[in-house]
Image (tube, rainbow, N blue to C red; front, side, top):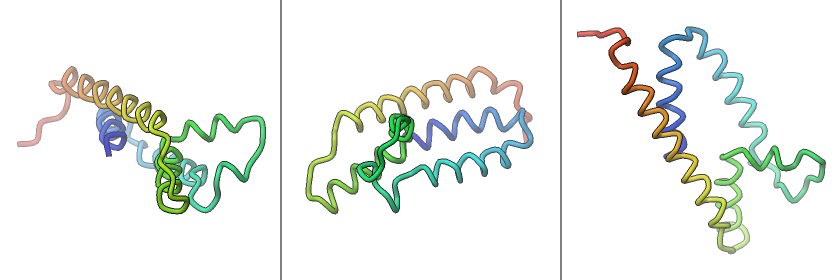
Length: 109
């Protein structure tokens, strides 16, 4: 949820200036969804760009849920910590963007 909040704040700022953001986001979210290990696992794949798939934040969360629920193992807390820190940085960037440019947004009263 922290990651979604951070991305949402940044996208809310960009969406004011970029009118076709909905189309771009629709494509990007579908692309990220198909790169997420929902029906497959990272252990089943082996190719040179595997590190790129592991950068997907959804794959970190799904891998943690999978290891807890299916395998009864503890998740890798280091990955979750990095995801949390990255999410907090995104929230901070989004909040600063909105705070800095809030006077240039259209006011609806």
